[in-house]
Length: 134
Image (tube, rainbow, N blue to C red; front, side):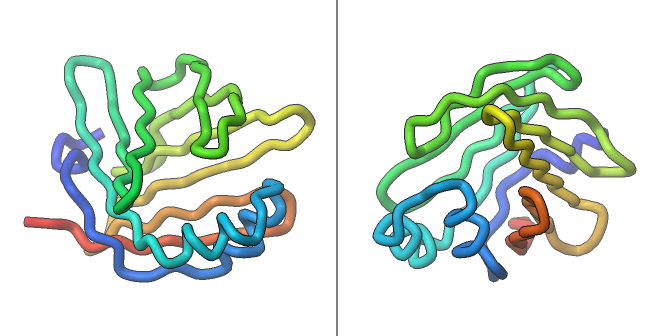
Protein backbone atom coordinates (compact mmCIF):
# COMPACT_ATOMS: atom_id res chain seq x y z
CA UNK A 1 0.00 0.00 0.00
CA UNK A 2 1.33 3.40 -0.87
CA UNK A 3 2.39 5.50 2.09
CA UNK A 4 0.41 8.47 0.80
CA UNK A 5 -2.76 6.59 1.79
CA UNK A 6 -1.96 7.51 5.39
CA UNK A 7 -3.28 11.00 6.08
CA UNK A 8 -6.25 12.96 7.36
CA UNK A 9 -9.56 13.11 5.49
CA UNK A 10 -12.44 15.58 5.91
CA UNK A 11 -16.06 14.42 5.66
CA UNK A 12 -17.78 15.53 2.45
CA UNK A 13 -21.00 13.49 2.13
CA UNK A 14 -22.76 10.22 2.89
CA UNK A 15 -25.52 8.07 1.41
CA UNK A 16 -27.87 5.46 2.89
CA UNK A 17 -26.18 5.48 6.30
CA UNK A 18 -29.49 5.38 8.19
CA UNK A 19 -30.60 2.12 6.52
CA UNK A 20 -27.17 0.59 7.12
CA UNK A 21 -27.19 1.52 10.83
CA UNK A 22 -30.77 0.26 11.22
CA UNK A 23 -29.66 -3.11 9.80
CA UNK A 24 -26.93 -3.18 12.46
CA UNK A 25 -29.60 -2.63 15.14
CA UNK A 26 -28.63 0.94 16.06
CA UNK A 27 -31.52 2.81 17.74
CA UNK A 28 -33.15 5.68 15.80
CA UNK A 29 -31.96 8.39 18.22
CA UNK A 30 -28.34 7.25 17.82
CA UNK A 31 -28.75 7.15 14.03
CA UNK A 32 -29.94 10.77 14.00
CA UNK A 33 -27.04 11.76 16.24
CA UNK A 34 -24.53 9.98 14.00
CA UNK A 35 -25.98 11.48 10.80
CA UNK A 36 -25.41 15.01 12.11
CA UNK A 37 -21.85 14.27 13.32
CA UNK A 38 -20.00 14.37 9.96
CA UNK A 39 -17.04 12.20 11.02
CA UNK A 40 -13.50 12.82 9.76
CA UNK A 41 -10.87 10.09 9.29
CA UNK A 42 -7.23 9.78 10.23
CA UNK A 43 -5.28 6.86 8.77
CA UNK A 44 -1.74 6.26 9.97
CA UNK A 45 0.87 3.53 9.77
CA UNK A 46 3.75 2.69 12.06
CA UNK A 47 5.79 -0.33 11.01
CA UNK A 48 3.28 -3.03 10.04
CA UNK A 49 0.54 -1.56 12.24
CA UNK A 50 -2.23 0.62 10.77
CA UNK A 51 -4.57 2.82 12.79
CA UNK A 52 -7.85 4.24 11.53
CA UNK A 53 -9.50 6.89 13.69
CA UNK A 54 -13.05 8.04 13.03
CA UNK A 55 -13.22 11.45 14.70
CA UNK A 56 -16.59 12.92 15.69
CA UNK A 57 -17.37 15.93 17.89
CA UNK A 58 -18.36 13.79 20.88
CA UNK A 59 -16.04 10.78 20.52
CA UNK A 60 -13.30 9.06 18.54
CA UNK A 61 -13.52 5.45 17.39
CA UNK A 62 -10.14 3.85 16.74
CA UNK A 63 -9.02 0.52 15.33
CA UNK A 64 -5.43 -0.72 15.05
CA UNK A 65 -4.45 -3.75 13.02
CA UNK A 66 -1.90 -5.56 10.90
CA UNK A 67 -2.97 -6.51 7.40
CA UNK A 68 -4.37 -10.03 7.17
CA UNK A 69 -4.48 -10.63 10.95
CA UNK A 70 -7.84 -11.03 12.69
CA UNK A 71 -8.47 -8.69 15.64
CA UNK A 72 -11.31 -7.87 18.01
CA UNK A 73 -12.98 -4.55 17.32
CA UNK A 74 -15.27 -2.79 19.74
CA UNK A 75 -17.90 -0.81 17.87
CA UNK A 76 -19.08 2.55 19.23
CA UNK A 77 -22.32 0.85 20.41
CA UNK A 78 -20.28 -1.52 22.59
CA UNK A 79 -20.63 -4.63 20.41
CA UNK A 80 -17.40 -6.59 19.90
CA UNK A 81 -16.82 -8.12 16.47
CA UNK A 82 -14.01 -10.01 14.76
CA UNK A 83 -12.35 -8.00 11.98
CA UNK A 84 -9.72 -8.59 9.34
CA UNK A 85 -8.28 -5.94 7.01
CA UNK A 86 -6.48 -6.76 3.77
CA UNK A 87 -4.97 -4.65 1.01
CA UNK A 88 -7.08 -4.33 -2.13
CA UNK A 89 -6.08 -2.86 -5.46
CA UNK A 90 -3.91 0.26 -5.34
CA UNK A 91 -4.79 2.21 -2.21
CA UNK A 92 -7.69 0.12 -0.91
CA UNK A 93 -8.20 -1.33 2.54
CA UNK A 94 -10.89 -4.03 2.65
CA UNK A 95 -12.24 -4.86 6.11
CA UNK A 96 -14.47 -7.80 6.94
CA UNK A 97 -16.36 -7.75 10.25
CA UNK A 98 -18.05 -10.84 11.63
CA UNK A 99 -20.91 -10.19 14.06
CA UNK A 100 -22.51 -13.55 14.79
CA UNK A 101 -24.11 -14.61 11.51
CA UNK A 102 -23.80 -11.11 10.01
CA UNK A 103 -20.85 -10.24 7.77
CA UNK A 104 -20.08 -6.59 7.10
CA UNK A 105 -17.63 -5.55 4.38
CA UNK A 106 -16.04 -2.08 4.54
CA UNK A 107 -13.96 -0.89 1.59
CA UNK A 108 -11.87 2.26 2.01
CA UNK A 109 -10.74 3.34 -1.45
CA UNK A 110 -8.17 6.11 -1.80
CA UNK A 111 -7.40 5.48 -5.48
CA UNK A 112 -9.07 8.66 -6.77
CA UNK A 113 -9.07 12.30 -5.71
CA UNK A 114 -11.17 11.41 -2.63
CA UNK A 115 -11.35 8.61 -0.08
CA UNK A 116 -14.58 6.68 -0.62
CA UNK A 117 -15.76 4.26 2.05
CA UNK A 118 -18.51 1.77 1.27
CA UNK A 119 -19.98 -0.52 3.91
CA UNK A 120 -22.18 -3.46 2.95
CA UNK A 121 -24.34 -5.75 5.05
CA UNK A 122 -26.56 -8.11 3.05
CA UNK A 123 -28.17 -6.06 0.29
CA UNK A 124 -27.74 -2.73 2.10
CA UNK A 125 -24.82 -0.49 1.22
CA UNK A 126 -23.81 2.86 2.74
CA UNK A 127 -21.25 5.27 1.36
CA UNK A 128 -19.10 8.01 2.88
CA UNK A 129 -16.99 10.42 0.81
CA UNK A 130 -14.00 12.28 2.25
CA UNK A 131 -11.65 14.86 0.80
CA UNK A 132 -7.94 14.38 1.33
CA UNK A 133 -6.38 17.04 3.53
CA UNK A 134 -3.16 18.47 2.15
